Image (cartoon, rainbow, N blue to C red; front, side, top):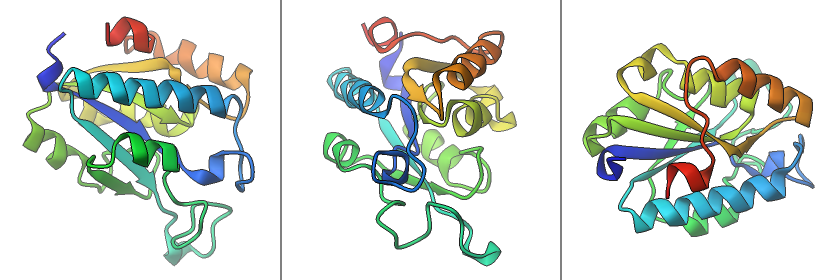
Length: 175
């Protein structure tokens, strides 16, 4: 794999999705550990890391979670500690490319391949991987670095993605 032209995109590992947050997901601690390991391995390989943070659109009123200024909207501290220099792309839609700086950031980095991980598998991960803007990249989703509300929905989402993108584990993608 051409690591210098591959970017690791870490989507929405934010406090509201963890225990104590407003919408805790299934399997979060394992996914967090796997994402931290993926970031560490990417850095060893010279692969850029990009963090994506969802912030609710305040013009639509108070959202159930990810409200600006809340503790829940913050990127998990272990992710920030693992990638303190990573650019942060802020989004307000499921597609991390939609009305964000992601495409410009990837162009600046010279990225041609994307490794995507994050939360929620069936929503932001899938919408980003299948975005019209993603068609110019070779895209893979790190299957062991994603989660959602429960195991069944996660499995359904990965199965649906499997016909469009590769689904390696961290060990397979970053060997």
